[in-house]
Image 1 (cartoon, one colour):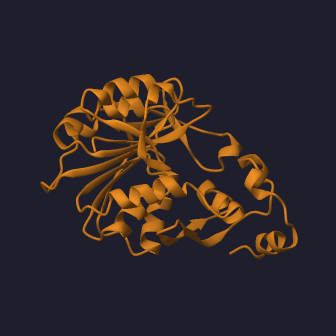
Image 2 (cartoon, one colour):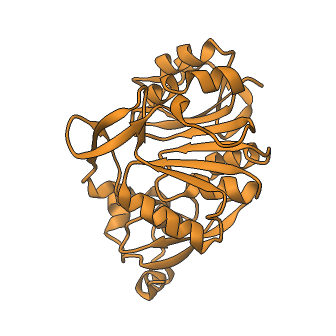
Length: 265
């Protein structure tokens, strides 16, 4: 763990909660193995020179994505198959495996850098056994495509999206994945930088057959399409920090992006 960052945090009582990703980037850099926690889960993550935004946010702000991760963990209590689309460095994959050791988690990630880090994080937490990985992206059809990496330092991690340029990658439709066992697919988490609706289109057969619980990243420009698609299967929508009261997704105002929970229950 970087001593400089620890000392800086002790000596400087700044309002870290209000800082943007770019402002956090300008603080002392983090390198090492760091503790990460939600309300119900504790594990370790690797960060090298601020290359994992999840670690950076948690270190300085004391929490990151807590409501969504804890909800995913609650969903994952039910033994089965869970699909983590856009798995990044493994947060949701780790939580699902911690929640029930008998779960099988399928992690889909287009960035080789992120995939490598996720594997290291899984091994660090002794969780690599029940995890299947696909290096590529998910969308509405299986094909060879391109992935354009994000070079914006405010993201502090190697992200990106399916594009007409960039690195050549495999793109898979979730309905085309061949599962070795016959347990139900219980949950799908989707975080794909705007490709989320197309991921749903490529999972139509899975959704129709298993009606999995879904946590999905939603933007203002795709919320109506996501609502209409999932409406046909009887899904209701919830904010991840309030799963007792369903919302009309079409009326939810979204400035940038939010996680939405979709369930038939």
